Length: 382
Image 1 (cartoon, rainbow, N blue to C red):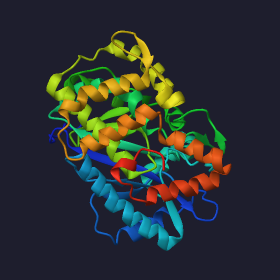
Image 2 (cartoon, one colour; image 1 turned 180 degrees about the horizontal axis):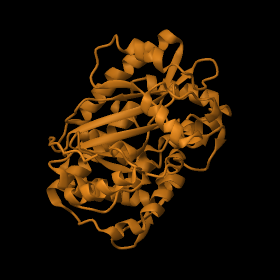
Image 3 (spheres, rainbow, N blue to C red; image 1 turned 135 degrees about the vertical axis):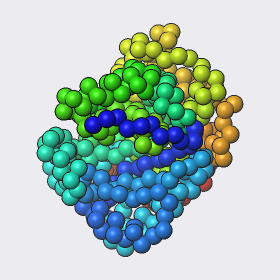
């Protein structure tokens, strides 16, 4: 199968996908209600889409093509409100977060869709363990070569994205000591990790042809990379974010991606190199394990510094390039989050310390997703 032509798209446009938990309101365990939710959601006229995910206790929502973080928040808000309305009818709840805190993977059901059945047949129990929940952010690129350049520039900031979105400290009823345990499950798949270091689309096509000749890959969907090009959309897709507990946080993370992309296109602040990836896995691990308290190794200088310090410096760099509606407020939320060291993983741990019951933590997280937060409260403590 030949590599798709990279379609043109408007630079810096955004698209956001969120994978969400469906839980019962008895003990707040995952519940197989995807079909019922999809049936009810079809009655609502909404932007974007609502589709099933690999197991039947999950659902994925996505925006349309957005020009600003404000538009992302508005579209996600419309879909969120319809989800909550539908869930109330079914006496279930919708929850954010990168993992469900106490579900048992062997109890999950693979959703009845050919691609999901194929994945299950190939990957066995890993497919049920893939009941994890992420946010994907697409950003528009002017052309194919620019997309690859942006992909590899963006890779330096993967630890920022992980630490800011981390919301998966609990797995199978236990505190993992990771802020983002979700990404450990992704790494179990053989085609995960990072994209190959090529900066021209024709060179990427050569790589893709080699992979398809092996029979291991049939399409771009078979790559579970942290960032991958999406030629049919004219975007790159960043896939390392845990699903946040609120749509406000999701929109703020999209704002950060857009601001970085604008900085790259305007200033070309550095040229990525293969050697950038010498510290990639270490930085990625640090962010998963310690969140905003991680150490960051600068790929260019080799300097070790607090991730929080590197994040705040980067937010200062991108500030002159922020023009889209809602971006200033969204990035200020992230600055405050970095200053306080507060992400959703910390919120979940604090709730568990107080309640000593993960079902109650999940219930409170469902209320957090359900409520529209004012901009000033979107990332802080409540």
